[in-house]
View (cartoon, rainbow, N blue to C red):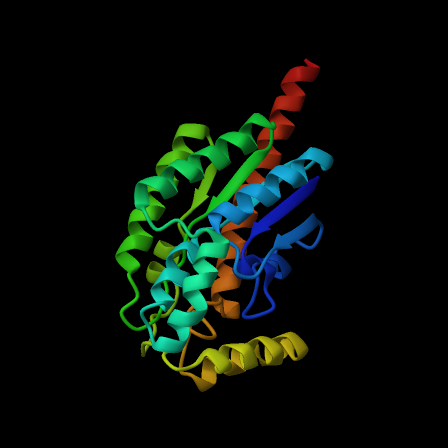
Length: 244
């Protein structure tokens, strides 16, 4: 069974932990996470990937950067310079209705290809004055789309609030652009340092307010494993019925 995991840095996992290493070890997985990717970017990449590759199941997690990158424009002047151009290049979708329509188009494209789909929503962002109300609203829209198209949905935002220990402090990216670069270098070269960063910053669910700690990645992987087991079981049942 071939599985495609596609999304942004939360899937790729060089900064913070990806959920992929925590999944069932017997799975054949292709990691197509890409740092900084948006809904628009994933849509274009996935269209090309599916032309020349066949996957039984697609696991999709996207939409964080469509909220995060516009937010960073208001954090400080240096972030504003960086993110104003990056939002244009990445084509961040800031309007909720446009986001919902684009997400539905993406899901429709995946389903028309005959793939089983597991979608996990936008996580909680533990950043100063982050618009988590938009996260909640967009997750509700994603959930509705999943229900309409018969996709499995995991609301990681709710899981973070209900299952994981709550954060003791709010983190800030203000005047910390170089720190984010340093994080990327350090965590890529020394992957075991990731939870150390979380502990040093007194964070629980993330290593920097955004990217997953091992706790969040692990709990997400368990939810995905449950969905995968359900898909495999249903496929087995259908196979038995077909044989009869």
